[in-house]
Image (tube, rainbow, N blue to C red; front, top):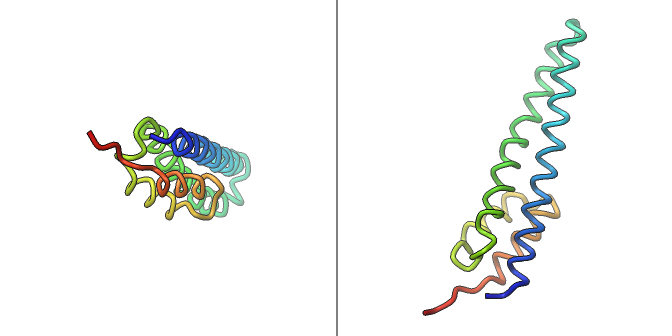
Length: 107
């Protein structure tokens, strides 16, 4: 198994998790703003809801590659799908490349 694919998947998963944490931080700021200023509560709620969906997906798309990094050849299709779905980020590109270059070991 190529260590390059393992490394790319590891770095891509970590970058996706960092992006998810940023989205969670923005959601927390919007939620705090909603509690502090009731006049703008609906705006903060809508903006916060827009950021929580990518945060949850980012956590999922960051944790799955980290779980699969030891055997990327067995999870090639999953890595390629996650890479395509997160193609707008550097982490998604790295996961996609890692999924493409991963090879299955034949017994």
